[in-house]
Image (cartoon, rainbow, N blue to C red; front, side):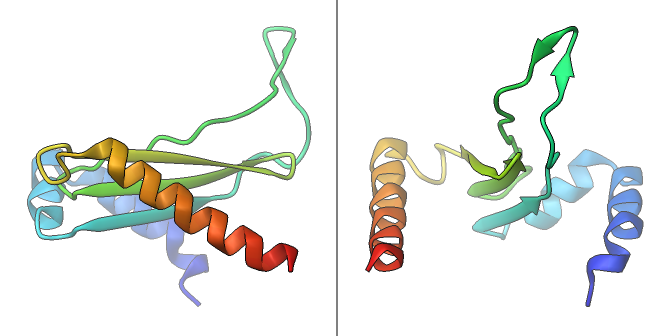
Length: 108
């Protein structure tokens, strides 16, 4: 139900100072975003774009995971504040294991 308001909310957030947004998110552990990407092949400067990668800054939170699609493929951008999660490699391994578990259920 909030989808029609997304642009309005994003526009308002873009007007706020970054330090203020960061101070609000300082008590948030995990941010997740789903960004619809381009559904058809495109080129940039004459070269075919083969993939798009997402990046979502933590802006004060511990983790930001952003999903971005491009021509039917999903890419995850995972940004971790190593002050909040000192063993980022273990965190990534746990995320991967969780995704592997979910994908195995889909295959079953």
